[in-house]
Amino acid sequence: MPVNTSAILRRGLAAAVALPLLALTACSYGSESKDDDAGQKVAAGAKKIDGLDSVKIGYFGNITHASALVGRQKGFFQKTLGATEAKYQIFNAGPSEIEALNSGSIDIGWIGPSPAINGYTKSDGKSLRIIGGSASGGVKLVVNPDKIKSLKDIKGKKIATPQLGNTQDVAFLNWIAEQGWKVDPQSGKGDVSVVRSDNKVTPDAYKSGSIDGAWVPEPTASKLVSEGAKVLLDESTLWPDKKFVITNIIVRQAFLKEHPDAVEAVLKASVEANKWINANPDEAKAAANKQLAVDSGKALPAEVLDPAWKSIQIIDDPLAATLNTEAEHAVKAGLLKQPKLDGIYDLTLLNKVLKAEGEPTVSDAGLGVK
Image (cartoon, rainbow, N blue to C red; front, side):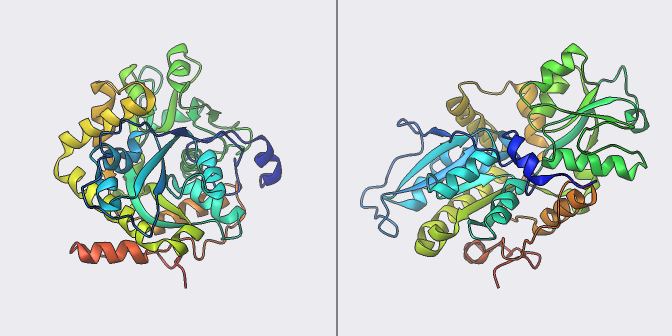
């Protein structure tokens, strides 16, 4: 039975990644940037871009947002923006970042695929565009090895996902259906008990024995492994070329129209940061963790950071076809009415930057601006 969407919207929890038309609960905006940024030095003689005093950038304090973490920490954004100041806000959940984008509190943001679809569909295609990719992968099914020895042992067990209707929740429901098992998508009850649990409390739930495993993103998956859990399945193995979108770059449509040079500068910084990350993985990991410590007050320990970092691919391609597939999975699960995604992408500036860098251009999978 399809979900009562309006009811879910009213009671939705703020989540890092929420599916279209689900969980758009209003949340407080992210924390402001700090004045002692390592990458905030403006070069002498630099000029403002588009006459802007600042560009406001949002992202999560999460390793899946490594492009933004490293871009900030190493000064890539400030370098390309010249005398226009790069300002930052940190978010814990997709809905609050979408709210900030809609209000103009931020101009550009790093965000999961489903909140991007959420914002786009809820505004009838008027609020944002996806303008680039950032990361793929980083989602795993981890389990208690004393209770679960193989994938077939998942039946009858209690497995956590971050939230009703979020990206990992739908991926798990889709996987369950492919096994031929039945689960009510709203209650989570059935052949498998799907327990919706915030990523922050899932490790404690695992330690207490109230769940037997979890289908979760990094670094939660690696945190559970550090508590004795075992990786039973990496979601990337279920996708073509082992790639699926976990983080995109979005922009306010009005900002894109009025300040294309500023948007291009941020995309150039992202592409340069991604190139540096992939060429210098150890240094990049340290830089990302340093920025995480600034943003959250606590760096990730090596036993969590190292495996989490290895499971995430840093890319420029938004992997548009996989975003469309994720939406189709939600529709099949009965969690979503078919969304209208035409025009959600505008990769014009990204492809301009990629061409200038001698890199191959990327596709919008037919979902771009006509």
